[in-house]
Image (cartoon, rainbow over the protein chains, first blue to last red):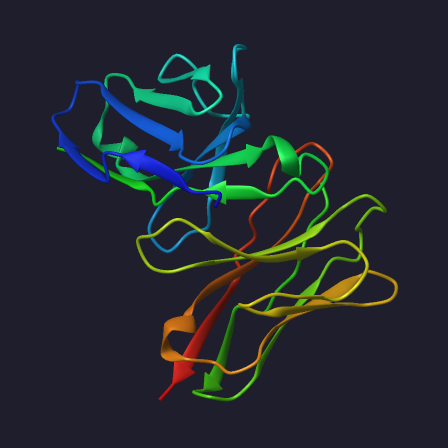
Amino acid sequence: GAVVSQHPSWVICKSGTSVKIECRSLDFQATTMFWYRQFPKQSLMLMATSNEGSKATYEQGVEKDKFLINHASLTLSTLTVTSAHPEDSSFYICSARRVADTLADTQYFGPGTRLTVL
Amino acid sequence: DAKTTQPNSMESNEEEPVHLPCNHSTISGTDYIHWYRQLPSQGPEYVIHGLTSNVNNRMASLAIAEDRKSSTLILHRATLRDAAVYYCILSAGTYKYIFGTGTRLKVLA
């Protein structure tokens, strides 16, 4: 149990276009989902926290108008990178926290999406 | 936010036990200790978590110091597939994970 999927697994786009990444919890309901970004040979950096039905909370330095997050249901969150530029090229990873794990605060991670902006 | 300190890298021989340490001297009473591992180009994989008592599961064991200021992830018999970056994370009470640099484990055949 506790499987999280992401789609697509990789995407290549032209500079200036927008890209949407989906994150789904397949076998559980997620009260909260998180979006991370990871550059090569670096650790994961939290970008934003999203709760179903409410606005996402962005970390300091993350542009909320550039990285649009929608958490429409307890099993789906989307991250849209708007007007992507080469510096947005990165590995984007989502995670989800189960309702049952609220106390332990365990997160389950998706496999990641590799974004390359040309 | 609570922080953790881990060695940058460790090596182990295949089939031998591995003890991966983590220091978290500023841990609060309600913080859980989580361990994840990440293989190249993959998302982190949950390994184990605990609060005060030692924990065992099919992947590993977690030994937590009595004062909770440190913990050790134990892989009982390392295999080549265990080569990964291991992260020790505290649930900081704000439901946000703060990832450190982790420990890169190299398993030697």
